[in-house]
Length: 280
Length: 222
Image (cartoon, rainbow over all chains, first blue to last red; front, side, top):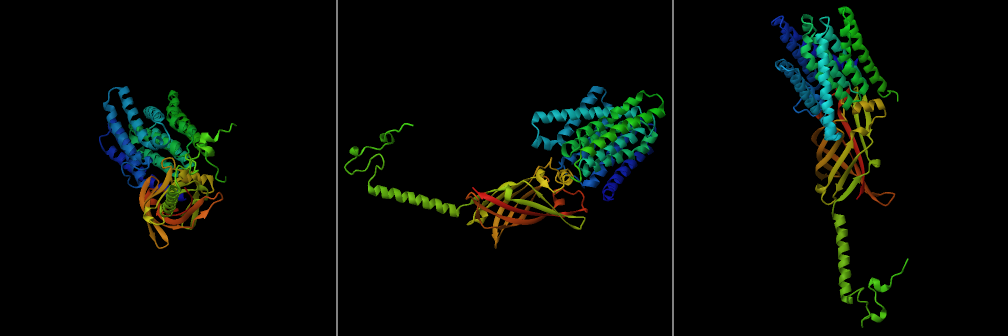
């Protein structure tokens, strides 16, 4: 009961903020795909920003706790989402995204550089994580593009974020779990927009992936989130792409849901079984 | 093992001694010189003893006999206690000039023990101490002054990556001899901090904001 009291207000703030921005975007020029996509990115970003700040209070820059870089990453992700369509080459787009994601990871994992890693080791991690987030962005974008139903992508991605919240909570950090729950809520808030344009979530792929990747990295490096859970949650959107081969829309949605649900549930179970025993 | 002749060490045979019969290489002085030299040696001893009495003593913290405990209100019902298994640092104590004394203490957060592994993990997580990001909590004195029987120690307390100045009352205990003849000294302090001041804001309500800290130190004189 206490957990609900702790969680619900922030989650509520995230849903409401994301929904309001999505609704405002709906009132704008209808039928504009880029506008819907940008509004979706802004909706998820503002929902997450509001929820995070609701939990932690206003965050000074630079934050002492590097986890509090996340609301600032959101702003960067929105800017990238807005700029990305202007870059003609797909390679350049990927390279810019990769560099920015790697930079974000460098800020996020600064304590590891300070206390644990050598410079080479640190930059190797940062490069791999940056590359991983780019792959996650591509798979989320593909998932949104190939969605058969209007609400499919936000619902499935919200499920992945909720699974991340569960896994993080079981890994010893309720706070990180709460941040993931806020992300899940922010994604749900854009359902209003997704009901109009089923590919609108393509625009929020960068915001979602950067946040999801950062939360998984925080869970793995700062809490006790097992590597297996990280891998399962990070690859869930890519696994869902297997369902693109199914031609019938209803069956494809069901297959995609199952393909997302299976790794997400496995990730939560892996976190549960590796957490220290309460009665020990 | 070969025994080297006495000459090798500068001793001369009695036959080689001079008319005053004092071996030249050993003493090389008259009785007056000897007296002067002895007086100088005594003076040096006296000076060093006086320095030891007046100068500062440095005590290296003995982690085995030092305790760092903290308590926090749980659900507003009662105080919950936990402790840190490891601690290191030094206390420099100057009896004559307390303002020249200093304290430096470092506690690894990973060593927190609340007698429950799940809770230890939670305490070390980003929700509370955030051990991976902020591996130590520390205190470094900036000013020490004697106030009645206690020492008022002002310094910088670092917790959760945030450093704030605090002033604590330190009650120094008497010195004692250890099992190996070493001199041991120590004392105790109890103080409170607000965890929200240090950015530890999670679970406010269920857990109190005020954290009571007890530090009982014992050190070995260096």
